[in-house]
Length: 359
Image 1 (cartoon, rainbow, N blue to C red):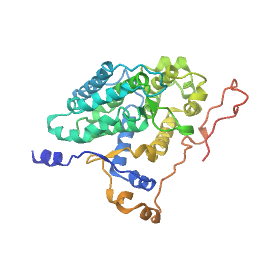
Image 2 (cartoon, rainbow, N blue to C red):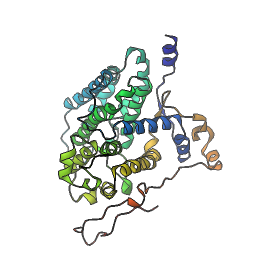
Image 3 (cartoon, one colour):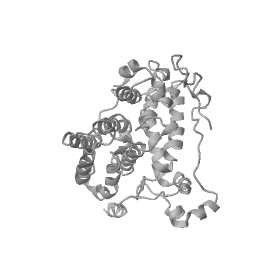
Image 4 (tube, helix red, strand yellow):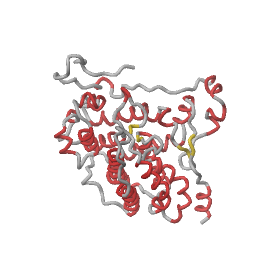
């Protein structure tokens, strides 16, 4: 009893603390960063060579979390999009989000047992940030990161156990993807931030990292099949990587190598194991080390950081004198195998050589 009392007293509302580029190196050495990357990698190990249909039956904890996601999905049902000619940003999303805010604690409490109810004040902000921003009416990899942080917190509190690892990805995260894709389409959510040349996907990332792990060890679907619509349709039900590719084909038009440059480049990688390892390098470099994304990440008791080392505590000038600053990682995450050949039917005004990155 004393243990739970003491533990629960430590929970607090998480806050945003990363303000300057000099904070990135502190973040990359933080307790939160280590716990999150360890969690992400462990899920990748759990789903390695595992199809969706082969995933073990969900535990009670997983079933309760799936019910939480069903409740979020029901809010979309009750909030139809407004009639608008805007390309992005249907204002009805704000109505959906207000309903989510109003009911968040009650909805999420269904997945939290009595001993951990005090943790809700720390969990709810991650939950709310998982489904996009109501002010900007957008969604991106930072919101996906918030959801993964929520799952990680459930793991840290032992609500999920090690036997739930595969189901966390292939049942919970897969269901989450269904919901956020529905949000993206229903309310025309704008992709958060400007991905530019480094964009893997307009909205998601981890479905590709975990999905590549699923595909290791099988020969039916190879990386070179990534730009192939027929293969995506065939593999989507069992592999979340190709399920994401299927969604791209449903939501975008034109040649694949034009609207999904990096995914097309990855089709030139020889094996799924190389895709998998390369995507982790890319995720650290292009998501976790980018201040415009992680400045919105929140820190609490479960996912903490040494606040005394941050720019807000010591001043950015002190950080510069110490030589800290944003860490630039090599974007060429896949080594010499990076880049697939551009099809011969590409227009003459475009490059006809192998697509590569520069550092």
